[in-house]
Picture 1 (tube, rainbow, N blue to C red):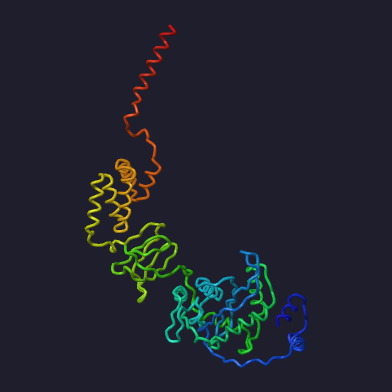
Picture 2 (picture 1 turned 90 degrees about the vertical axis):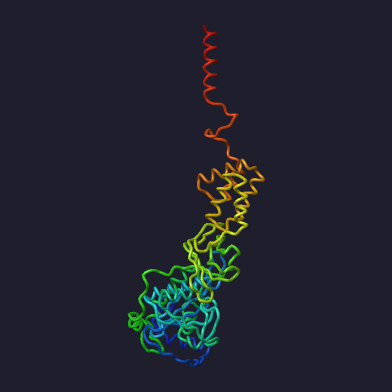
Length: 413
């Protein structure tokens, strides 16, 4: 079939497919087809998805040819397929391929049948499989329900298996491409020219004509695409926070030492109960090294040791005490170590220097230990606004200049 299609497209061959088939059969011999089961589905009800081996494509990272992965989504009623090529696979890539396929079709079916690959199914179970959270949320965004097959049971998704084999044996067999875009363009052109216009062997109808009947029955697409996020598991630290990309986010009381699920994107961090999947806390993203604390997560009583520490800071200096009090008000228990850091700086640089640094921090409303440390390490130079016994007033310099000018005038006279 591939030879005949290329001969028609590139060389204008006028003979029929059976002519080429008979010639090829003489070269390699005939092979009888295997019997397969047929699963009938209503229009817009079901699609089947699978990965297969794609063509060789030059990798832009190292310049070498590598085998691509062929993603195929096939509608159960019309056998209309969407075929996409990728170099590498991941949970997000697998989810994005589904979203791209739905948007190419102009709608989404109600059920997607898939096998138990890790990108979609974390724990296979015929009765209660555990889906990948990101993949599950993407399908929910489009109103689709996932139906994983039994393990080692590919016949349940035989339609997409046939669609994968059709692409591997027809347009992609033995070909190499210089870029993924070139390979995808070649595959899309073949899909439009040959796959959609063929008469399907089981339905005995044209695929494009059956898809025209099925498309109005697909679910309408949502107005906005899915907003992707990252996810993982975290243990709640002793300060009642979890760490996400070097920033810290508070969790409600009672979760210290326990495992929680975390989802995050460029704007938000969501902390979930691992059993019920209920939302525990949602925070805005924070800068690296800083904390994002919820008001209800602060302890109701300040521990006695913290009271003693604040009193010690107040005895060290008025500005030091006020600055440490501000740290505790804004950062709660997470700021205890920073208060200890400020007191250690008083031993290293002297109380007077730390007092000036804390005064500057309070004036600028910067309640960070790092500001005090950098202020002291850089030793800012005195400005004209500062007063020091070594700096004389400008009136003394004026009187001295006037005196010297009068002496010169007398000498000239």
